[in-house]
Image 1: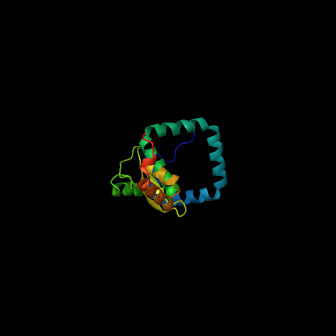
Image 2: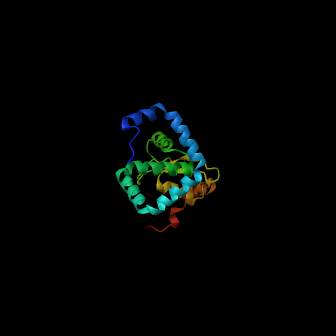
Image 3: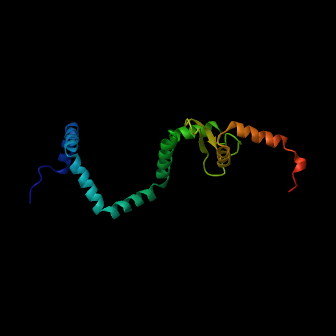
Length: 161
């Protein structure tokens, strides 16, 4: 059995004194042995897949709210190019109400409304208003026609319900 050259405290002190030197060595090692390290990581994951999944599930269970926010932020960035903080600022500026009907959301969140061609964000809408705009193909002329129809429809021709 080989004798340790350092005890834990001496080793810790050495690492603290030489942190930059050790970091540079590790960076160079990872750079020159990249493929070997990738192969090792893949093989380790393949042989320990169930343990890895179990650790991931345990982490997710312990950090549900943190993971929910992480995934929400990831979705907003990838889909609309805004962060969760940007969304919250828009939500506050709209007083937590739909930009069209002025009602609070019936679901947990207001959805991000954007122009499909340019990707520009217009505001936050409730599910109903967002779907309504979608059904009208984001067309102001169709919406104007719908408003005219509602304002000028001849009620006499309509049967009572």
